[in-house]
Image 1 (cartoon, one colour):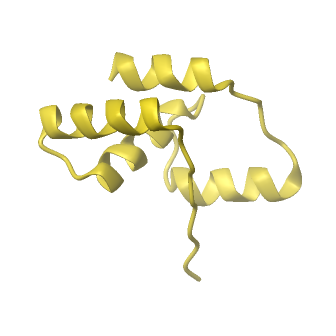
Image 2 (cartoon, one colour; image 1 turned 180 degrees about the vertical axis):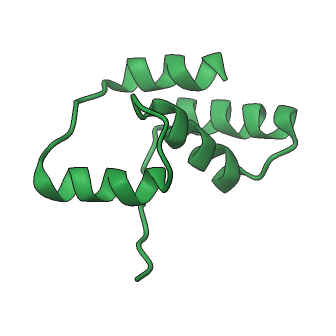
Length: 75
């Protein structure tokens, strides 16, 4: 089964993500996947699949936009 996550960002974060992706030689979608994987607290296989299960069950921690922007900046 294939799943899709859609993330909507503000203009400031969009510009930052595009710059950071280019600096790392990645596409924006690859960089976004990397950022999401690094935002998860534990390193596990199939990060996104497990995150989707957590979201469906309501077992998630909240992350503010400022916290996410800092994690992106720290990559």
